[in-house]
Amino acid sequence: MSSESNSGTKAEKKPSILSRIEQHVQRRMLDGLMDLMPLLATAFVIALLAGYADGLVRGLPFISGTSLDFWGSGLIVMVVAFYLVGLLVSTRWGRKVSSWKGALFGSIPIVKVVFNVTQQAMASMTSQYRFTRVVFVEWPREGMAALGFVTARVRDPRTQDTLVLVYIPTIPNPTSGNMALVVEDDVLETDLTVDMAMKLVFSGGIVTPSEFSLARVPGEEARHRELLGRFTAEE
Image (cartoon, rainbow, N blue to C red; front, side, top):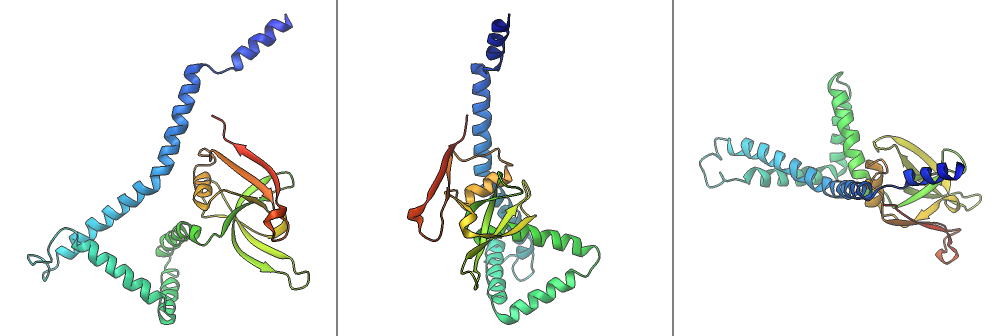
């Protein structure tokens, strides 16, 4: 009786071919969506801004009906304007103006909500360019590993230990998270790139890399690497 029930349980647990095909198709569709999403979002935003800039620039009296009145002129003006603003804010005077802008818009009751949310969103989108590498740290307790991004390295002048500032993002919204100061010998190194890790965060773990490794590297010599394991994603 028990053997029959056990064999029946095993048969029920084994997924059918149709179920495995369905899971495979769903996983690959999600992989494709997450891979193309940045490109689609970028193309949509550029098209939206270009259309708005075109309508604004080509509608000016000294542009309309002239040789400058062509599709794309607004995009050219927008690119030049972005470059000039970026050039301006790279100077000390420009940074002062930018800080005044934040103080001004941050003090208006309704406007400050939109301004702060937009500022945080832009900071999260550009923050990956300041991440030096991806690591795992034991958090929130021993025996659990959380994905994090190293933002800086510091050294303790007393012990000469190297510590790293690790930003641990909240999934699936990386605009909020936790900051940890960890001894560098205690972090788990991985071969995940920043782009791969961001896809993992935004998808909530649905889009996983085909394989990745975890290793502990004591000191600064990689030849003493202690390989903890290489992990592969299941279909």
